[in-house]
Length: 208
Image (cartoon, rainbow, N blue to C red; front, side, top):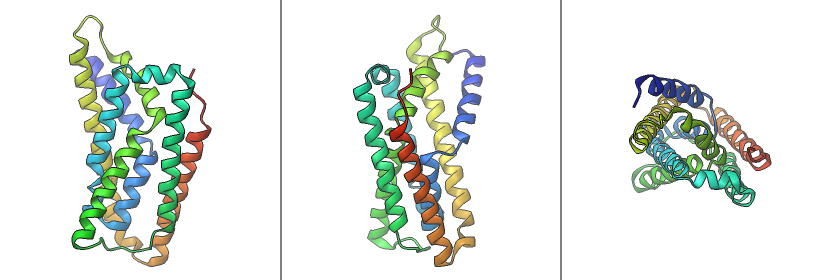
């Protein structure tokens, strides 16, 4: 793959990932309330969600979704509903700082992983974005499959690093929010942001 195209893709993807979205809100909320170690459980979920969404997009399903109002609406409402549901769960969660011990902690990490995966993968804007964005960095004169593999790997790694950054940052700051009142505020701010993102996703119009 041409180095100039790859560097341009890396820079553009980094800028896009730097803008906080529902995934970042989820990762930061978990890390701040449950701790940096449990927050790390969201990183592979984000990576797997990006891998699935980007691969499916490049295989052509994204183009179908962009062309079909019904399919796009169905995916959009599913993703929006899940975001709202997670936001409500954050609102209702107890203001606890410590992670759950033993088996409960393992189940908690599985739940965090699955939630991060679904939120990242079920993002209709992301799928349409991949369809419109990625082809600009593919040289038709070179093997397309190899270039797609490089771009997918690059974006997945950048997405995982971004999630890890927010997990570490939020987990490090959690000692400043040790009181139940502060934790409740964090939960409700994060929950409100996710509910708002879900409503905006549900109201968003199909590109084109």
